Image 1 (cartoon, rainbow, N blue to C red):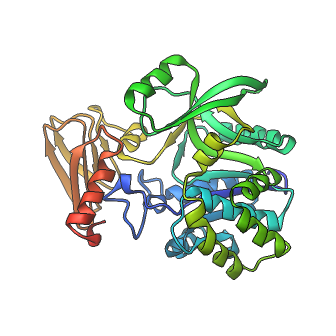
Image 2 (image 1 turned 45 degrees about the horizontal axis):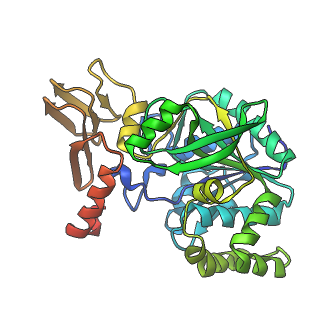
Length: 362
């Protein structure tokens, strides 16, 4: 178990439209078990960090409409550690609120922020390398990103260009950042050997983040400091509703990697994948001899099919012939059949479905 001053923020407020129709507005991807493990993505994330961070030091930032689901899925999490956003925030304001919340509790805290939708292969190596990352930020007034070496060009990930070495333990200054580049640039980045995939995992010391927030959200910071850093839960929610949606509507990745100078990146190799879209689900899912990924509890009869993803509910079956590289997903009142080679295709489809068919289909 890590030191008493270490905290974790799990970001679990998104809608996950790129995994429609299974990920829906009322129950997004972080609350689903795509691989039949018996644990949802959120539960797996909590389990991963509870191995080395005390559960009462783990906070979940989510939309207020999902707060009850979080408490149901994580009964061991203290109720006050669920930060229920009054409006659905992007990850920068959600992280800002959670960071202020932690700073009022422990001004000397070290923090790791994580998405709730990641796949980690080697959990033991993950713990070891995150432990090293905590030691670094505790001793340095810097933000630390966690990066992994890219294996193929992938337009769904962000790319961190490494600069000069700042530590012998695989740490480098961040030279540049490109968020979800076009395929031609992603290919160049991978071939250059100078770039890492951005995992969305970041660490910092509380004082480092507070200095940044005083700079980019000065009015909110002044309100908190004038209250002596002692806001009630209701006052925190009021502050979030009043300031953050309009003043910091962006991702934490862009705020740190694109706007800050005191940022390093640590190269890690614990086996990482984002679970943000159907092509990424395909990459990490078990497959049959023809490369088809039939996700539990799906049943499928496939003939002449290769490299497809099949996801249908229990009690139903998919019968498919001569299909290659497709997604076949049935959930509730929506069936999606489309090529599975574009991370953004399903997001575009669900947006069109919402406009033309209505909210009840998203």
